[in-house]
Amino acid sequence: MEVRQLEYFVAVAEDLHFGRAADRLHIGQPAVSQHIARLERELGAQLFDRTTRRVQLTAAGRRLLPEAKATLTAFARLRSTVAEPVDELTGILRIGTSEGLGDRLDQVLESLATRAPHLQVRLVSLPSAPRLDALRRGELDAAFVRPAPQIADLATLTAWTETLVAALPATHPVAARSVLRLVDLADVPLRMSSRDANPGLHDLLEDLLRSMEVEPARGAPIISVYDALAEIGTGDPAWTVLYSSAAEQLRVRRIAFRKLDLPTVETVVATVPGPQPAAVQLLLDTCLTAS
Image 1 (cartoon, rainbow, N blue to C red):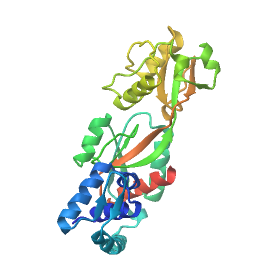
Image 2 (image 1 turned 90 degrees about the horizontal axis):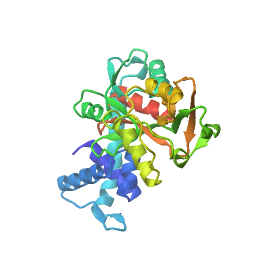
Image 3 (image 1 turned 135 degrees about the vertical axis):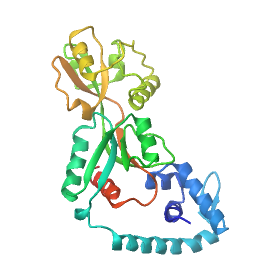
Image 4 (image 1 turned 180 degrees about the horizontal axis):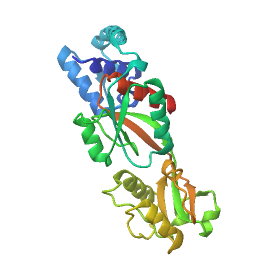
């Protein structure tokens, strides 16, 4: 039996809903269901009555709940007894990142440096899929990912949210507006990075365009954001999409950055499930405070 199995059991028992419990635990619902099933097999008892409409504790589940809570409380005391004080943390915290996380990442790193001055932070920039694979292999301790992916085997915590921004020629008529809709740019060629370079943003934007039935012509693929913006500002009309944190770092003449009327995008920090080392827990607490 693992501690996290009891954590998942208590979450489902309190919410009586596997989906809400998964959201609360920052992990995919399939993982919660798998651990509950494993716990039931190990205990030799069914803990929940499940139907398509409701989830209820069985008699065995009701008997287990107070004991599970007591066990988790005792385990928390045990961890706190041996935990290294935050300001004495040492070692290296390996964090997977990508370009353009901007000032929000800087704020998290600054807070870490203040709270744990002897902890070294090593940033490793990788594309999103290799980043998550490195986390699974234990080559990273945590990884920032944007937009929030659907990953059942990793735990995720929302670090921050931000908007999407259109970058277009400052002389274009729609640049006079402060907020743009995708349909406002339907007649202007869209330039994007290839899916291999940025699958998260590429797929997100394609889904948004499809859902709003907007089909702009496609311009040349983006290799370098700076070069593309320079071309957009001086060449034939075109536009591209950036995260607001990336746009905030750019100062490009002849380019207007305008907020898009779209849902905000989550950046999450992903970790392997279960109890975390002190340095990783400090990172999660820092992100939770910042968000």
